[in-house]
Length: 173
Image 1 (cartoon, rainbow, N blue to C red):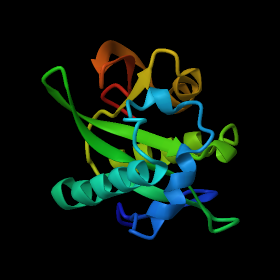
Image 2: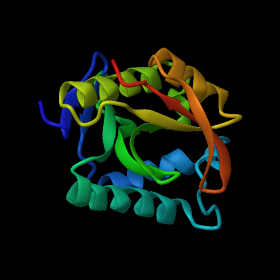
Image 3: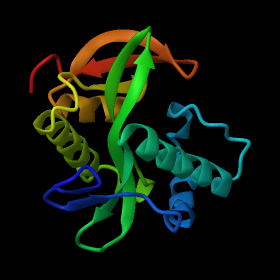
Image 4: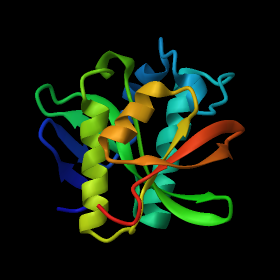
């Protein structure tokens, strides 16, 4: 299994493509959690989706990592993104387990499944000895996902102008 082709119980993970841009615009519609992402909401849904996905293409080239398309096996639909993303925080290098799902797929355990898969892949392939998730202080749903992934708050920080918790795995699985 490679980073760009993973599977978990209900999900398949693959590289994003340009064809995913139009599908990802749906993520920005009726999504009341966008303020947790530090996005420029003056942009159109298409501009946001294009910027998000083309940034992943850069990450693939530069780092061999980034958000992957999350496909629900039962339907074959793109329902979100998840991946491992190198981050610089407070002068230190980290690897973040990140995820975003379309609103219709919240509360169904997909974010927990995806984040657990990324952590498992990261440890098994020795990408890092510790993983983090950067989560807004008021994003309780994502905090619950991090806790289900056996992460705990390791410090507070500021990221993209937002006060955040940095959840971490510690230096073990």
